[in-house]
Length: 218
Ligand code: E4P
Image 1 (cartoon, protein in one colour):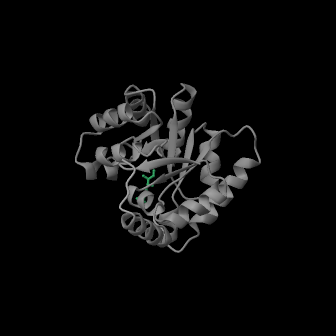
Image 2 (image 1 turned 120 degrees about the horizontal axis):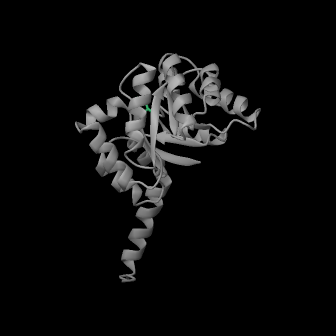
Image 3 (image 1 turned 120 degrees about the vertical axis):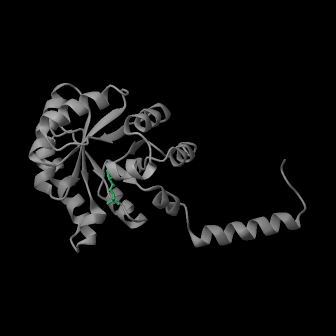
């Protein structure tokens, strides 16, 4: 399973790159606004830092403008993936950009029917949002199961399932058990994945015991 980080913060990306766990980055207009940076500048910086795919989202809702923005975004770097909303116009733009060999990530997906549309339009990634469905008492993980099942029925579908709006390690591990291709994870949740109370207790005991021997390796 590929791990993307869902952030536009350069320092967070740099720290995670050093773990070797990071396969890509996703951003959205809210994350860019939070960073306080210029859209094109921050995407350029992230694309140069990260060897994998970096999603940058369009800022308009009209297909022709999304296509123009998508082409401009794609000029930033070879690893830039154009993020488009799952609307009639977004799917139109996805089809047009895909025909030109530009990679796309169709976002704001909340149903398996929508996921099928994105696949048929040639999307590189579909981003179903699990946390936002859970927030309104709908089954976020059920949606991932449905999309994985539908896509697996058709060998000509190459769209990757990119699980988004992940809020906790359980979301991630449920998605991994379903065989989802990618998860985009907030930095805070990536750090939560390392934690286990038995790891902390065991390490504390090992450090105490090694100190009692007055030895060190270096
Ligand atoms: C995905 O591409 C989105 O940027 C993100 O996962 C949305 O997460 P949120 O629902 O926590 O804002």
